[in-house]
Amino acid sequence: MDDIDDVFVARLMTSDLHTVTPDTLVEDAAAVLLDNDVSSALVVDDGTLVGILTTTDFVDIVAKSQPKAETTVERYMSPDPITAGAQDSVAAVAATMIEHGIHHVPVVDGGTPIGIITTSDFAAYVSSPEAPSP
Image 1 (cartoon, rainbow, N blue to C red):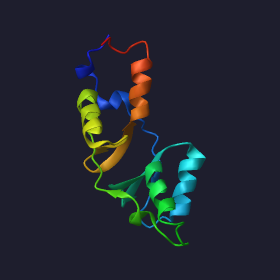
Image 2 (cartoon, one colour; image 1 turned 30 degrees about the vertical axis):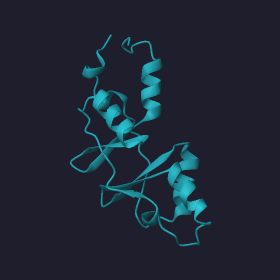
Image 3 (tube, rainbow, N blue to C red; image 1 turned 90 degrees about the horizontal axis):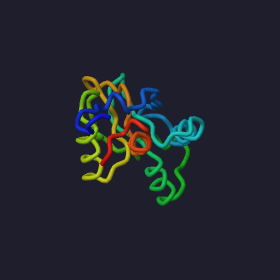
């Protein structure tokens, strides 16, 4: 069994990314999340991560009255999201997520998104037979 400090983000992250651009309409971004059964989309501009849009952001969108047509992702995304590198310790990333109350951390390589790690990835890891004993 692995010691949790020896497990790296690359092992748990999802590399099948769903992205939108800052000028994507929120309706289209919602369709990306629903069609792919995911809870976040990375916001990229010319291949560089500039934000993240999560299902929690859609609560904000609805609470502020339904958006008019032509409302873009840029208005509701979280800019400059906290990120991780593929070789970061999952223990450190988990601590960061708890500290900041977030559920999604994009994994980047020089600003380019290569994956995402979420609380669901941690739950799946902890419930797997290879998980270290507490």
